[in-house]
Image (cartoon, rainbow, N blue to C red; front, side):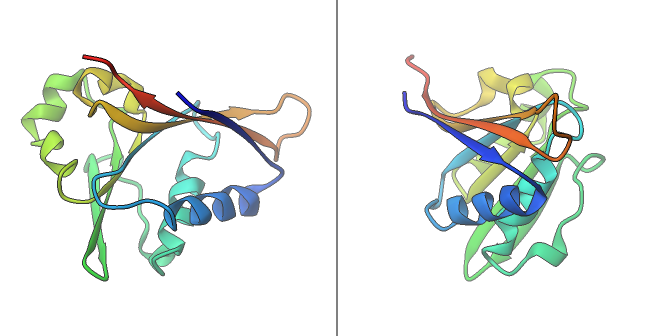
Length: 146
């Protein structure tokens, strides 16, 4: 498992980091975004989508669970699973089928960990106690051994 830490001084840093990551991801990659409310997960998604020129399309999937985007025949699925009771609800919406069809960004993905594919990128967002604009992003690639 690889670990990497990124210090974001502001929202633009977070968005630029996400845009850079987006340039490296491919079909079937899954990114799980973890962190308290207001820690930068949605700003990350905004930056990620900006790589594809879709930053103005973003809307929070809080009430729909998933928003779908398509650019240049690449599907991007943005999930917010915060309101799900457990992974069974994720399965009920056919959530695992999305993993095969594009790039998935999953906010609060730790809530459905047992439904995640065996390989994914996990990013934990932490607020800095002394600087309200700063975020610490801890990135690891997870491989769940079955």
